[in-house]
Length: 444
Image (cartoon, rainbow, N blue to C red):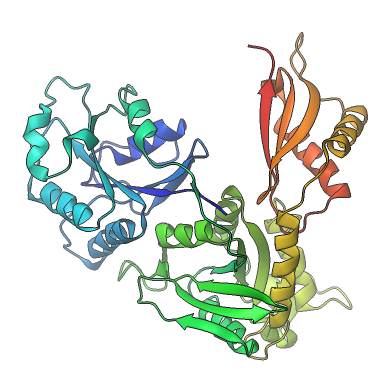
């Protein structure tokens, strides 16, 4: 089973964590500003398909509940990450807060790296000034997020992709916003099967797990506990703690994205779906509280015209199709933990998706599909240069991974790539499974 290690950037505000993440990702993902404390939530990026980098909010004195919640994010990062980057502004002498961050990181027992940012500044201090922090000098790196100096050297020493032995246990993660019904569904799924193998209750910082048997297959269900209230920032507003959910996504084989039937239009659901797809995990959309749809008025529920013979459930499915148009392959299932409706079908879908994740397509079949795609729609390019796809091969499963070889493939428009994916799915639907592409051009 493939899993990317999670690496956390922690440090004081304005140390340059967001700039380092943007430099490694080679694009602006995190907001960068001179004002301290710009990053308020975790920001996540997959770097070179080798590891996941998480930029946490900077540490400040907890003068209110909101600042205390930022420190909780750092604690989450230390607990959950596979490695920790302690980022310090090298142009300043470290203080007691830097020392505390380093001490907490070292106490975790994880691999800890000291990243001395802003080494391009004239006032940058020598490395000897930071040895009192206790971090191994061999794990200390001078970098400049502004110029890129030292970034590649740091990336090269960080943990890369991890491979775990497949013990035939299928891991199913329940992913969703607070109050969407994760815990209720978790309990219902655990009770649905009589042959419970094991059950472990975690703390509020852990993922709760239960293992059941279904049709002879062990399925471990993960109830993520990474979505927590930030405090009293604003009544009714809840913050998404990315690193806990990210860790569960990376560990799982298949993710159930839970959507509240009473609140379907929420952008965070789409963000979560994007993270699941980015991680290459199987995905199904599980609509919770579907029993409430039976009594709902379609016009009151979704603000649309009441068309004859259409129910609230019909409008909901239409809304999901629009909001998640980038997931046409993800199955949708309406469930109710209250009544138990369709809950067992989640296990059926999980087995189907797992089978699809292991799909292997012969090269001869792939190249027939490629030839048909080129014949139906020749890829466009620039005035004198056009991309010329030559052949397609599959290099991996879980998720299925395809490599397209050809000439000037950097000119391929994203729409043609999506067109090629549709062509593959016409013959191999691979329900609930994202597929990945790489491109190899024979030109310079």
